[in-house]
Length: 252
Image: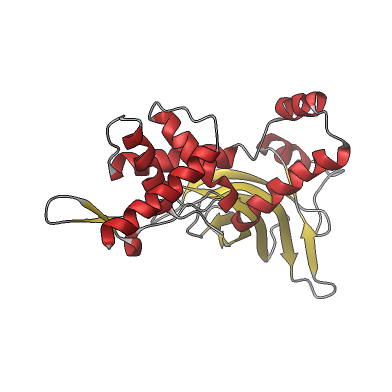
């Protein structure tokens, strides 16, 4: 379940007003909302040093430590999908033709429509230099069963920007890649009222794509950029309830 953007914005506005810290415009909020969502999303991918520190400092048992990663997998599930790649003869590789932004590549499957059998082979992702060395050697030449690939960027006509290009050896008939996609930027859409006030427009708005469990962190981190530090998460819950009640009273 996604996080409603209007709920977050109204909670942020309520706390800013209560703290007498001025006002945050829809444009400012949308910019911070995108930044904070991206930061939380990227926090799901700690580097090796962070993992080692977490493991060394962890006072929990192995099951609890595993559950932490299980929880992260659950939060990432909505962003996991198969990406569309189409063969481009001019570049002798497969280009990404989807609309989302790929964050990480997962399992890569190369399909070879040979007479018997048909191969659906897990494909090793290598660096460009390793790919070059492996494909040149008679001892390590890739096969239908053990293909190899590398990724690069290329400008594919008629596009004018770089597109993700995957080169595979041997060249398959089709390429399927399970990917993690970046969340779409949230957007609080609005109409302007008769006295210049901003009126929420759900039809032009985009909710946060993060799990509902991240709602408090979204509010806290947006407020942090506004110079407000919240140490007690119950304040967020109370502020959300009070802002919703205020909205109801204004409409009645």
